[in-house]
Image (cartoon, rainbow, N blue to C red):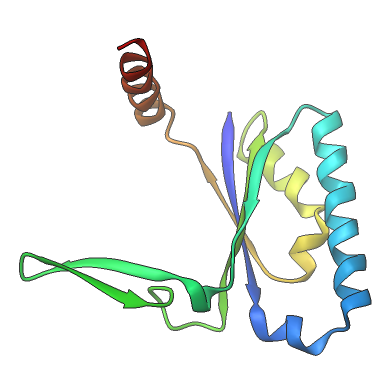
Length: 130
């Protein structure tokens, strides 16, 4: 099964640690990602730019409205995503529990919607073939 792991963090925490500490933390995260790779569990991931660079779109009164920043006013913001292959949710929890990023902020783990993703893949295949 595929899981999407959403890593949250308090961006102000990054302002309070040294460049050295940040580099050490990132290296620990990368090392664990390598463990996941070797086990065939790491499918990909992306770090996100600061929430201050985000734009949220909403439809209000039939019009699209763009507002700066993330949707929710919260201390912790989405910092990145990790795509994970695991047997089931319990296995995904076990794998992510050892990730050093959990020490920085919570990870939300959600199963990928296989049915909709198959529809997307079928549509992609039609567009590639012409």
